[in-house]
Length: 117
Image (cartoon, rainbow, N blue to C red; front, side, top):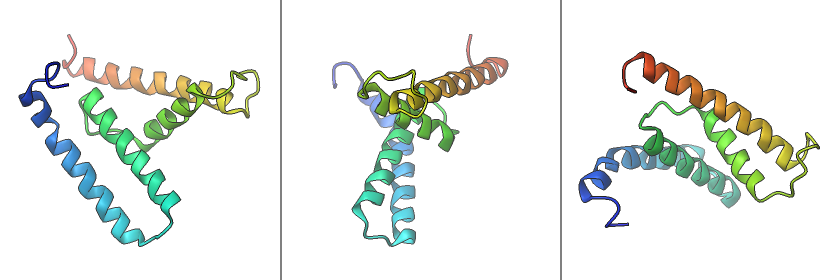
């Protein structure tokens, strides 16, 4: 990892990760839940949020995009029953279509703003 990512690049992600972790801890304190399954789901959401923020280069990551990415990732390991709309694979294919639309909208708005050349 060190050879592929210079220290300056890694340190540029520090504010994103720190803000996400602080937000996660604050939510956990407010929830005051001792259910480890709920905390696991929140940690998964935290992880997906940080990854999307780093990869997309924006802090404006919708919760719908995070949910769709989680469903799509579950579908990667599911039996390929995409012809059944209620199956995990079927739900993942629908989530994939929404992801494509959301990313297209995000890239379109970035292109309109002159961020993408």
